[in-house]
Length: 118
Length: 496
Image 1 (cartoon, chains in turn yellow, brown):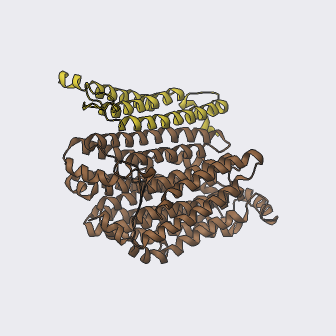
Image 2 (cartoon, rainbow over the protein chains, first blue to last red):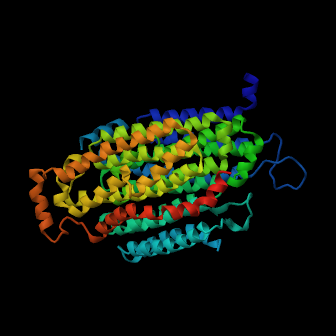
Image 3 (cartoon, rainbow over the protein chains, first blue to last red):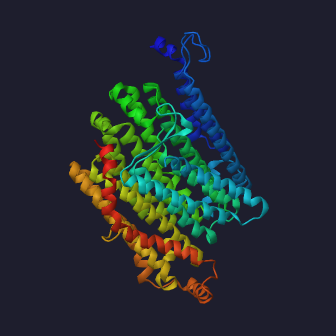
């Protein structure tokens, strides 16, 4: 069991990140920490997909020698996904700035309370 | 001809840039740019649909890289329907937004980017590319929801963003599993490769689970719908109409595409649990969405919960996978987009005209705003499923489909849902037509109506969009038999 998990260390790490990220996303009351949780969650997915392309001892696909090489496609995909993640974070933080200006707090529960009182 | 597919995505993108550029010199130019762009978009979409619905399947290799290695844009009958729907509804809502909506050039830029994202989701034939368009749609939708001037809009936008990103990320994880299992991302290629890997493989099953649950968040199936009521209620009126009629609809299309094209009906045969998952979530959404809608006092929140229930019908049709149900699914997607968009437009019209946003404030509306009340009444009856309307035909085909598949439980739930839909809409009809206006607001409304009819900012364009939606909701049903015939080749491919 331990050996099987150690062989898949990347995937174990990826799913730990997924767990931590979704816990922060759902459980944390601070809006900024929720956004950080979202980023951690996405990082878990990025790690999962990038690690799936990894081959021990393999090189980049640029070399012409007949050697095992790492599939470049997942890296390109994740590069795109990271860009998407950055834009999401930017929009989220922009909205949080507006919420702070409007309500004077970053705590999700307090914002909801004020919202109900409107 | 196939270049037109790329143009479908490029036209709104260019329009968005043009709208932003036009704003540098003069403000208030965005609407004209957006209207021109969407007019061209409608023409392009109609050309593609005309070609596809007469039998051709059009495919375009982006950048000249042939599929399965490059990104493929591909249109069949179902996606052509979505492309036309997106273009037409966006143009209709734009007519409304000219007076009602946020009017800055940045708003129209975001609006056009949303159209580009939705069109991209409809035409793409690549699973990862779908994720990118899903996020473009998401990002612009979050920004549009937050474009209202109240703090509530920003909170609703952020909540939508966090939940929506969670859903899109699950979808990406599912695609990751599918890629690990097969090494390809092209949808058509994936379907054969997944079959070769074997439907019993844990990788394939996990991919299905993550993809479907991720898209459930985007479609807003119970219990993953929590973002939707706040997002619809907190957004400006024209934005809620656009998002309510298009975003969930195109996400539902993506779900259908993934389940039928990528995983194929054979997967559902081989893994009965997958079919049970779809049917169970659909049934629960239909019932609980309606029950929650009955409990709402705010009109826009009630309409949002009604969407949860209506998309339950769509997923129910998907879970039985037969031709009749699939026709019903396509008709209901289009019909729901028109009806729900129209209802949000009319609700916006009423709140602009009378300030009324809650169920109680609809008392005696027929006397105060007869045209709006009439449009609302027609759309409500269409939504419940009264025969000449398109809402009836969609439900009819779906019910026939479930009967054909022998899914008696689903049939019962769908018939029950009609009663529940009546439960939350009939009280509005009763209030609009059979009660007197509340004493306090009646005078104010009379003054407003007694003016030039324009006193509270209600414009002809706003009326025209709402009334057009009501007329379409009835008139579309005449086109259903022809549409069914045109869709037949597509269904043959989807359900061999």
